[in-house]
Length: 486
Ligand SMILES: [Zn+2]
Image: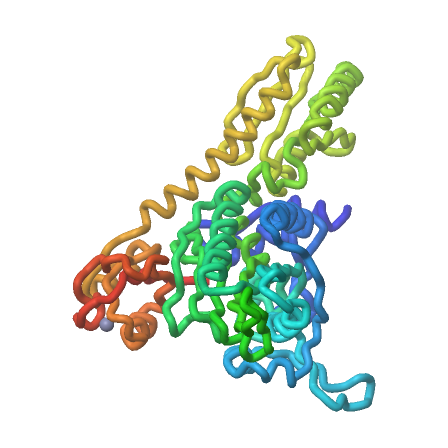
């Protein structure tokens, strides 16, 4: 018996509503997405996990390319002297930087950082490539891994020291161009979540004390998980002129005058996979939207010895026809019974199962079963392509609706320290309250219940939800969204 069979027979033992963390870890491993690496904080992404990431990547990459971004690749190692040119980057990331200090037994003359993020190597090159206003805007993206040596429990895709992501870096003539870039990319992240991952996102900006080191404004897309915690699902930063000044990124304008560029950076990591798994999966295992599923349809023939040939032929022909339009797998294994196959494909998150038995063959039909809720429909063999498309659209709509309900039920207004703590304690989710802008008011809530301000409205001029700060009672300058987070 292979390892896969062992996993299969165990099934998922934890429940999502009970021990959510253990349930999540079990789904990740038993659906064959990832394993734990020998070093704490690192994971091995298995082919099934990587296939989902690749599909997500393709979707986002196409959005970038359609909108003027080019991919490039920079070294994983950054000289210390480069990192040091921007003081806030050093200060912000220093405790988490992994250093290469030796080559074999020889100590290096200069330490090299494994990139925690790449502003300090990409900006100096953009500065070499930009001469005049005609070279702007310049947009470069790279798909890579970064390392941030955080001391936390490993949670595959959510918390790992090394993670996969994309980081986009752009330079513009002025603030208006750079700000438009910042919000365009945030909008694309939102589109990815809503149209590909079936997860509604909420967009806003981070409070000043929680911005990306060196950024003027950090915008964020937050996704609420079923356990009531918020995930920072992607961030896009307007960096002002700070990085351009540090790395000498100037250009000559129409009047031949030298001007400093305005830059942005934006990143989305495989935490999106974590959010995907956490949001849709259930006690039977992984649930995937058809957009990202490695197999969208599994065809399971059900036969007795006397019907075997006709059932198999019918199923194979149907699978071949669908294969032109969908990602289809025909599970014609002899050694497994249909019930075993159903469980296995449910565990692995295939959105749609087609059952073919002697009755279906006789009636010229096919039975379609949707993964999220087991809804069964019978389709005419002649119109199978349409029926499959409808069922897959249905699956996507169901997943999105369920995720949307999770968010809508969990945004509450609260005012006053005890009401904020009580509401967060009872419902999780987001608590909206007025905020004076003082970090101390966040700290007070954080110390009590480990919730923080995850988001402020994007529009800084928006009237606060209450006139006074929900924590200290001073005048409120904006609305804060408190939540526990990943
Ligand atoms: Zn306050």
